[in-house]
Image (cartoon, rainbow, N blue to C red; front, side, top):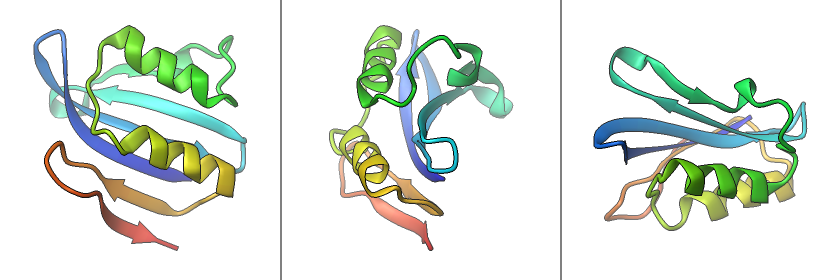
Length: 103
């Protein structure tokens, strides 16, 4: 599973966004966490959506109004195309992504 991490704003609150690709399931996923790691959104709560499509992930990010670093969703899509796993990347608004783990 790949995980791409970024800080964003949701309804005026600072949140932590985790998006990635789960190669075992063949699905993209999205999670939004608030303070104290409170889950504000998870794609697991919307199984009716087609999470095998990157367009679903992009659409949900837009629906939530999340402003993510420009490379983040491209990197997530790339992970899906390459069936990447065991990869954690931190994305910053003002700098290049930093790979925290690759395996």
